[in-house]
Image (cartoon, rainbow, N blue to C red; front, side, top):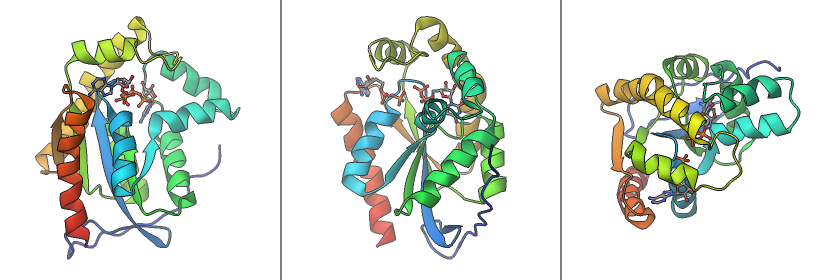
Length: 214
Ligand SMILES: Nc1ncnc2c1ncn2[C@@H]1O[C@H](COP(=O)(O)OP(=O)(O)O)[C@@H](O)[C@H]1O
Ligand SMILES: Nc1ccn([C@@H]2O[C@H](COP(=O)(O)OP(=O)(O)O)[C@@H](O)[C@H]2O)c(=O)n1
């Protein structure tokens, strides 16, 4: 495994929009969190199209790492099969590399941070402060139905792994949402509604951010 890129970041508190630095570029980061199947990926695609963000899915980056034949591939594959959270040093390295390689400076980081270790390590290594956390709130019953119908051939979309993922979400990921909520950073969306209706609510939030930045 390569070393984590040294990317120092600063936050300019004099502006409304968080100004983080990654290497020599200023970046805006929104964390997109929610249970498995809550619709994070679906809505991120809409946000990319309408608001010019680059979508970085932690899960997609980890799956690409498995496919690339990386020395961590087997470990990552086993963790995903068990619904467990991959050590943050692996995931953060992939996220940093993707941000540095991108021409863009606005990122949706989807499915990360998923536990306290992810959150604390990302903050420590990158010093990046998220603009806000978009949280998709959805019932387990609805998420289970969606995952069982997803049909993307994912090894973790089977009922046994889905139950494990729900447990990890409740025990490890919701506390991260609570952490940001206590800082007034969470924008909660009712994700149980149809895709178009969810996007109407999402649009309202990103339109406000767009106004602040201009
Ligand atoms: N609001 C919605 N209503 C019904 N189905 C949805 C909705 N949002 C997403 N889906 C479907 O549910 C499945 C899971 O959505 P996805 O965006 O992959 O979730 P996540 O990234 O949170 O795991 C996909 O098949 C997607 O097409
Ligand atoms: N920050 C992250 C994100 C995903 N993952 C792994 O990738 C799996 C799939 O995550 P995902 O975000 O693609 O999909 P959903 O579970 O949200 O549908 C998780 O269950 C974890 O095993 C991780 O280890 N660390």
